[in-house]
Amino acid sequence: MLRAYARATTLARLCHRSGTTVTCLWHNCANKVAQAWHYIGCSKGAAGRDLM
Image (tube, rainbow, N blue to C red; front, side, top):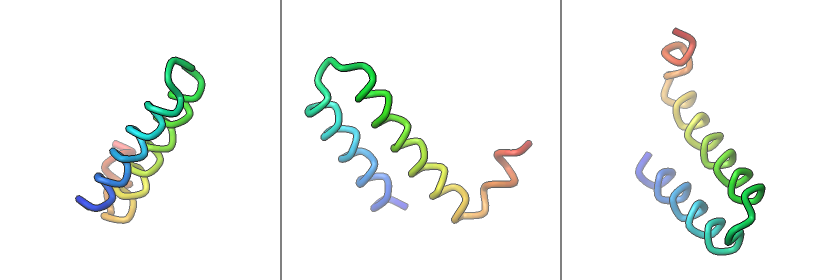
C-alpha cells in the first residue's frame, strides 16, 4: 500500500509540475490519483465500506 501511495504521490507531483497552472490538467491528474486510491481500497476489500 505504501508503494502505491508513493506512486500516486509521485504522479501528483509530476502532474503538478507539468500541468503548472492549467486547472483541467491538474483535475485530470487528481482523478487518476483518486482512481488509484479507489483501486487500492477495492483490492483490500474496502468496497463494501465505501457503499455504506
